[in-house]
Length: 262
Image (cartoon, rainbow, N blue to C red):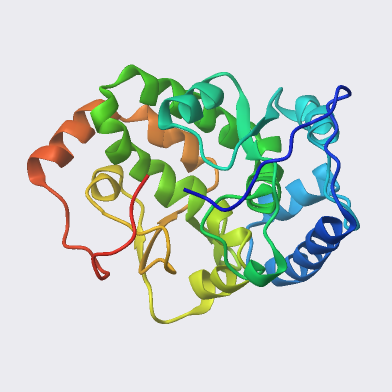
């Protein structure tokens, strides 16, 4: 359930954002763009330059699509706040990234549990201008649709610990590429600099056995060595690893039993 109501595009495909909503976008993007400069991977920063978000108003889906298609052929799709897992993976498999058509209220400026348009646009769209990232999204969607629906939540752990909350080794040290932290003023800093969370090399079998919570700063992050290693994850037989992870069982959670997975 969500208290947010998605806005519907008009006949021209445009959404009527209010002055207050545009101000919220302005506040979010101005402060987040400062935070990510020394904490995001180079590819994300380059992606910001490629997309060239407006800072004074919420971007229109149509404008973002025109820019994205030039790089990878992808587009964003207007969706409600929450959509079924099958619909999510179907969109990915068709080179469409779901982007909710609402923006958080000022009272939830620092944290919102639902993925709003700032999270989707700012956190994910810049890296969708890179083929390895976009191809991973597409093929992951196809893979998720090919398996038993009961196994999709476990498979989604791969997505969670990469696309949403992945870290990268770089010449400048650990940097973030996950949209979950790069759209969060707190977790961008926490994920890269805090001594509290664990940071381990990414291994798909290990990730498949790792439970997570959606409503807390992550207690554990997995780290890739190179940005293009993201797509190489799909070179491994994830179906076999999925079955092995079910046989081995989950690791003990590093958090109290509250919240939920997808």
